[in-house]
Image 1 (cartoon, rainbow, N blue to C red):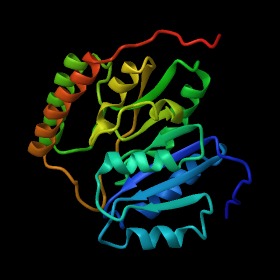
Image 2 (cartoon, rainbow, N blue to C red):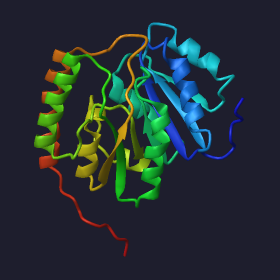
Image 3 (tube, rainbow, N blue to C red):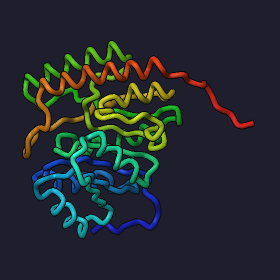
Length: 245
């Protein structure tokens, strides 16, 4: 059993989950193994699941004392779950992973190290799934949405749908919140004056549960959200540097 550290963790790994009873326990164990050499906490945020996700995670705390479990009283979506986790996080660096186990936790420390080794101007390191383990229809829809988004927002990202992202907690808290914002973190970070970077990461097939989105629904929401982010960008007024006199 890993002993809980009395010191604040360096990294908080935030995982939003909704009806992921089949994946959550093994995913938490994989995260703990990946971060063995880094002071960390694991924050699962349950978005009002209707299965045994919460029960399985709370039972797991006896094995993983660094595991915290938050629960929404009402289903509020992935972006809200991520935000709840970031607000509760004790680490200066936050890593997010999707709760279905398709992101490989073994990749996360590499992204963390890149962020830490860079200057404070780097706000986010995002994962780029170069070999996606999804259906052909899902890959095509994602490629279309990513291409349009990258051209309109100039966010430098090939794959904002990847749930594996690492960022500075303080930088995230500067960003405007809206539903689905987790897909626009690179553009929002750039809007706030931060640099962003990307690393190729592994992507695994889903072994349990079911996707929470349909291709058509995802595309319709994506295009609506892009218009909103474009408006936010048009209203940004960067101050340059800020100095205290």
